[in-house]
Length: 529
Image 1 (spheres, rainbow, N blue to C red):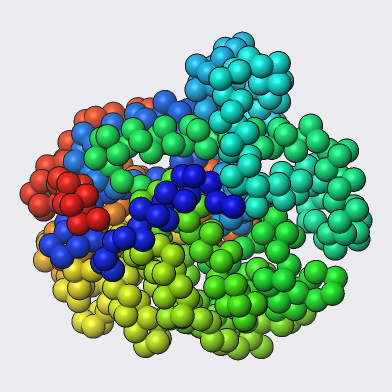
Image 2: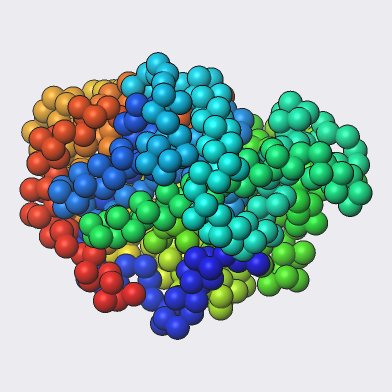
């Protein structure tokens, strides 16, 4: 059963005509910043006052969009692209300040010493868990009787995923395991009697997990409503694959290609290319698309609808896999022995269109993109992605060069996987730096000029939407990098400080946005949608 907000997210779309997310003539801009990277006195960004202040800053700077990374509960390496659930939110992003305002915490409960420049997960995780336990204790003592009906409705309306997720998290805590595959076999195999006994034994822990999801949902709704009032729209991010160690796979094994022990028969990756002679093994289980097709792709579309309850548009990660995905035998030592396996393509998007009424997506169509991927994207008028850091290889037909853009495009200076633009330019050999300046039609300048110039190039392009990571607006170097692909540790920790978000750091961006005619498009979007 879908929640009321999720049903509304679907129902509100069903009567609309099939239009792209950005109508003809649309021009807007925005910034990319993960929620965890917001300033906060509690060691990690959250959806509280720091997020509201960030929305204010976007509004004041003339920006219409805020793009974040995936917001699910993180697992291995604290990566937002390795979530423990496709439906749940990350409880670390619950705002202590808003819980104090709700009377579920005291100020004294929230004392602690944290870094203001990095997310120190080893400190933040136990701290937030302790706070949520304190909030749950007060809630059980009926400190907020008025919230009880809303909490019960929340749990009832989301029972199809919440019950499994809460039990999964409680069992992970009980067995202190890295993977559910290490649990007793009767729990791995989801024998009904074993599940019933576990729910009975872990009832309190399950209730804590459910309450955390309710509190996060409540705070997130408040933030989204505030953003809409400021003319700021939200872009969410949906990973294509799910983590093997997730409630998604544990609760829905029939939707994945698993063996009798519930281990993957095949895993996801990418084939050998210029950057990797052996390809890349990601390790995610792959979908059983035939099983999903027989259900009308219900689980996949529910996943989309759940995210649309909180955002306006979704970035579809690894879009090319909707046409074909690289599938590798699970026991293969490298990705070299994989093969391209056709995926449902147009059939899937027709099913989504039948449920949602339109396709509020941005296609992350980076990497080796074949004609079938381009055809799929264009058939459904889904905006593609372009990244300026990839534009300067000397090839005049490079799709990332602005002169080759169609209007139905979203252009980025860089992404969360790239070096900051300043670091990227600093690391270029001198001949390539000269090529950049030549293509920009600028005399050679200093390293510090590269990020502002690429932002100007993105904003002045034909793309419907231009986005820059906050780190590029602030002109940060290597110290601002969010993620280094292939590096298992040390990622996803960068955070902005309050000083960085001073209004004076954004005045030039507001001027550029006005000159580029990218201001005030929220009203245009409302009319079109």
